[in-house]
Image (cartoon, rainbow, N blue to C red):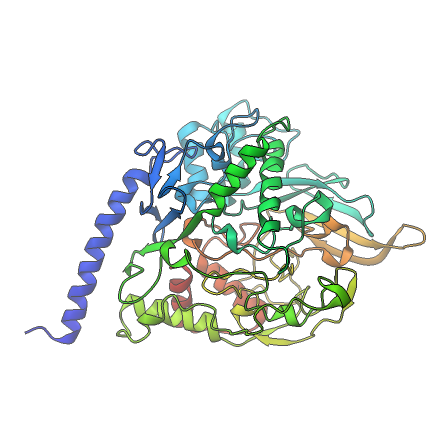
Length: 517
């Protein structure tokens, strides 16, 4: 006779044996994936293929033909330097890139893979030597270790601030064109976006694209993504502007809009869709979404999106229960690894957080020409800023600054979980006097100007959009600048930043949940 604890152990061991077998099979596909091509599936990756990652394995499903067609323009070189969209958006990395896999590509190609190009892959684009493997190893260090691409943008001519100092450890100290370092966003689950790019520049009048709203979605998203595909080819692939053609842009967007990515398998849990759970990409296929769905911030910040300055109301039914993906596991035995995932989900949904010092919520904010008073202190949860049901991004186009780009986090302790971003530049900008145009004493120092480098608004320094949370395990490191190497680093940052303390078990549970998304 087996006792209950023995039965639980036997069942868990069976799951782990199955886990090992499935992940071993997945590695036959994933380990050989270099430069976006998969030797075992050279032209077509069927839905259901597992791609291994540190926490198990992810899957990417396509609604276009039952799999990923690698013959389309997304996988073709449309510029002059050998890059494709897939160079930085790998199916094996949740349609982004993980730093570990970039480093592997460096090892396998001695730094000649197309991702290693000085146009934006190197730490700086001048005073470097990439003629030797040693030189390339140094020049591409941020790409290898943090998965960062250098984004060089000039401040708008009408900016109400001046860049007064840039201290860039790699030599790009110019104050007219600012080098910033960001992770490639995933080109999957895009139908849940509220803005395109970290700084929203591909959903902005500054680039001739359209800010998304309840009334123009999803047409605005489609047109913004088409524009982004052209801009990305011109800049990252050093194209001449003739490709992708209009037809190819549409084909790229159709491909992207059909993709869903999520963690499907856990090292400790086994499949994430057993016993009523809905982990994996199939659970996302019919997930409803519109701009401002379940948004609490939407109702706090007036917008000029409708005549008379009215807010597009969305559904008006905000609930902090953002995720229900693993609710079916909440009554499993406490020692079952799946119960830990359910406990982490409950923490994500309900843990009270005193939100203060977040630019875009707690300060005065300018939106669409209307200045709205901030909320000095707001009691919220993780879902306040990650409100899209079962997806986790911000459903309303409100960029925020939670401090991930702050090189001097003086408003909270760095003893526990403070982010070390000493590898990033320090950029000082000062508000200018509207009469003289000269810098005033009102200044900010950051490692990334965020939205302010797009619209020229000093109030928007450091503000960026939150990413979609599904598929996190496939694309470490985290935050826009790669400053959190692990999901536990992410949890520690939020504890430190917002002044709450979790037990070691709670931290472990929250990491288990995030790693299962």
